[in-house]
Image 1 (cartoon, rainbow, N blue to C red):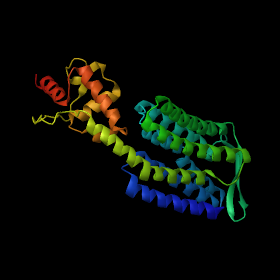
Image 2: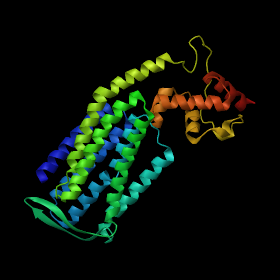
Image 3: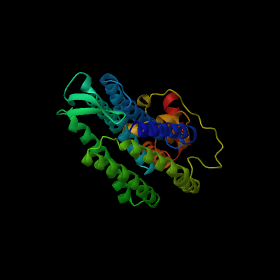
Image 4: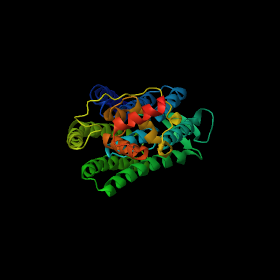
Length: 321
């Protein structure tokens, strides 16, 4: 088994390098997903060649360090590709839950709530952990199931929206999620000593790279055509210079309607004030340009302006009296 774990580890490292060099700008969550897979596969490999229980437990903890965050990264990639925005407070909550799960899963060093007993054994030339599970072990499985259900929920919502540009993406991602679900349930039912999820993760990475190398570029071209057909934030004939503002506290601006802005609209507004373009704002907030356009339109409506130039004039008046 250690040979197969070693091969999986090498492949995941190669894919991480490829992602970092060629695809990191496509979706920033890709890098974190590929890094988590590399950490997980390295943990599996290190465990399989561990000479004693202490090193085996450390390697097991290392594997959990990557695996507990994998569902979040996959979920964020799916939401991004389906052009759905995940509120920042929900994102923060997910990471907090993942950290708690990690603490529970690696508590075998000092507690018996996850493992009541643990030792090592040799299967062929590979080291495996022989474990007796504690009362909190089902929590990890519930966490994985919750992550898979969240992915299914995002995909279902994307289908319900009936956006023609999202349907093909949703179908492709549904296949990706189905592969992970099938392998995870198969591993659970047959209680295999080999972590087949290490293979599942690599399949997921390859499918995502394939998606970004072919399908995503086509979708981006269609989106660019739509953007060019729409009215921009300022007209082509408007040559008057727009004054931008840095380090302004939005709460201090005396502008009617500003209290109506949502938290995300305030984030977008602050970046607009600093002169950031729609594309830059989208990348910084990990959302699509169309989402930023919707937020901008909502900001204009609530602050009773028609475009960015009028918005900046209103801010200038508020700042300078």
